Length: 60
Image 1: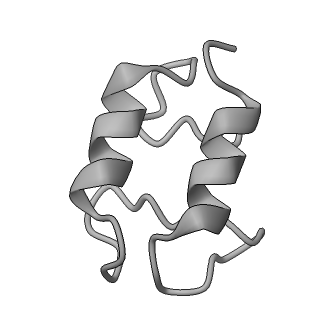
Image 2: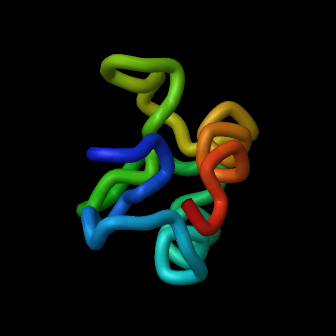
C-alpha cells in the first residue's frame, strides 16, 4: 500500500477504500485486505486500528 489506508492501491485514500474497510469490519481481512494496521502485517482483524490508519490519510 503506497499510502497507509490506500487499500485499492489507486493513489489515494477515498470512499472506495472506506467501503472495503466497512465491508470487512470486525472480520478477518478479505481481498484486497483492509487489515492495514498495525504495520507491517496487520493483526488479522479489521478494526479501529485499521480505521485510524485510513482516517489519518483521508483524501491524501
